[in-house]
Length: 130
Image (cartoon, rainbow, N blue to C red; front, side):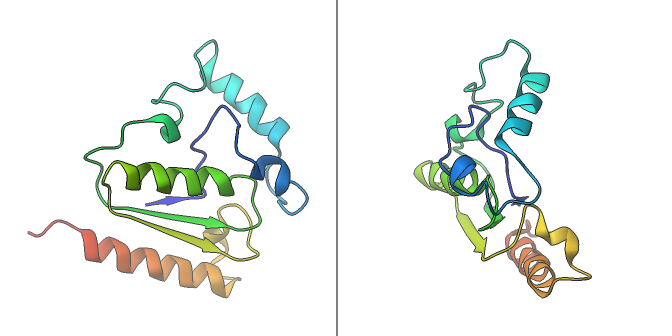
C-alpha cells in the first residue's frame, strides 16, 4: 500500500498546479528541488524513479490512498491506471478534502482513522496464506 505517492518525478501531473491552492503541505517548487537532490543528473522519467513510467507487471495487489487536496493527486491516479494496465489488482481511494499523508492525523481526523482501518482490511485480505 502507498499513501499519497510521489510517482512522477518529472512533475507532469496537472494537480501540481490545479491543487496548489488547497495543498497545505507540498509545493511544486519544493518537489522540483527534492527531485533534483534525489536524482542528480538522472532522467526523472527513469522507471526506477518514477513508477508511472514503470512496467508494474507482477506487482502484488496495490492499495493507493490519496487526499483530494494535494498536488500529488494525479500521481496517485496515474499510478493506479499504470498498475491496472499491467494487470495488477489495484484499489485507488481518493479521500475528499484531506491533505498529503492525512493518515498521520488518525488521532485527530475521523477520515484518517477510517483510511487506516481500510488499509488494514486491504492488507489482511491480500496477505499470503500461511
